[in-house]
Picture (cartoon, rainbow, N blue to C red):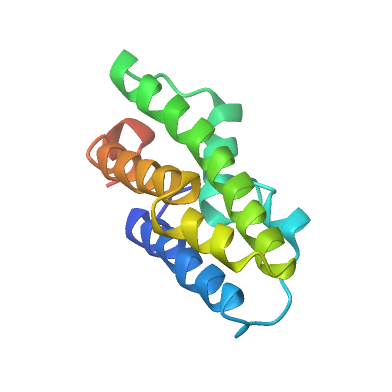
Length: 127
């Protein structure tokens, strides 16, 4: 399975807006338990597909891949936490997460590592 790195990056960036809208009371109810699952989005499906197929990767690419797998799972847990805070009207706490807390840090890690892996995409059989 190929991955569109740009779409995956944009999808993760879009979560911040969706969650910010929820904190502002401008969204339909989100399901934090579903958000917490890291294997349902396109990036998660790709990550688990690659992990299960065990491709031969350079040590550096394997390190980046493992980091992305872990950070992506953490991102989903952080996003679910922000959604729970929004639903509990914990606006201040949720905004702190979005603007520089654990959510923001984890999101930036995912996006950064996606960019690094994009440069290694040939190791995954991608053009």
